[in-house]
Length: 370
Image 1: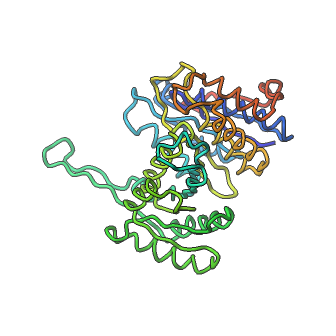
Image 2: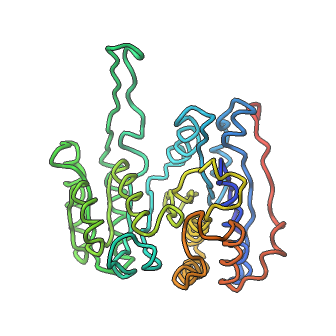
Image 3: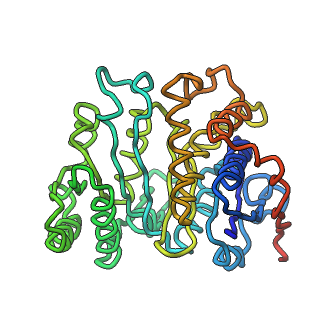
């Protein structure tokens, strides 16, 4: 049995995660595996009630899980970045989830804003380094709030960190078995430190003679993703650049309503999430599209070894979008959050979800004195 930690988080997070779990139950019923869930309360409401972002022992609890399913973090009532760094960042860094895995796949032609592009033109796997770069938050302020204020932030890259994510990318590119081309995205012409990426890429690449090595600056990459997305197969890039180009990729595939991602340490507990925000203005209205969360659940099953079930979820999403049974990815689809989840369950042929819904689930009541 797989043990999954669930952090619904803020805004629409709990609603889309609920549908993701519903689909996972249906897949479990169809494909003959089981899982239990542990619900964690961390997010804005918990912080406002306890003044605690996340308890110190939370990471120890997470290490006992097989995977973490995250909804969304962020709330306008809280200082910008406090929850994101204290929960999402803390989990990524604390569990050393050094791979951010983001598939950019166009499911249906009518969803793409690019003229004349079809699903065969947009199928990119982006592998973003997830534990280094400016996100380590080395830096600070001098004379803050004065006319002489200085703010600094350092980009940090280590040979170990760069090499392990590049090596993962080569393996992923080989496993995809598509064009077998791996593109390194950097800014080595302007940022001297990116020479470490280029040298490591070339050195590791010699071990993969079946993979074509490609290099592109990040600004050119953004241009070519719009003009010729079919020119990309697999991309490996830095933490910051990966953060940016995957949102561009999300819009090319139809919007954040379909964009799923994984925060992965191979062989260890990893975290999966829709990459959209918490959209607090839609909280509790049952209008948010949960397909990104459902897709993230499918990625989680892939990580857990339930590959047949993961593929079935992806196929169900593709059929529903191609047929326009789910006509759009925004709040204007005419379908409720629960309604979209129900359609995915039906597409899976899963009627066992309801009976399993209450089985193997518990909540963690967390406070600062745990």
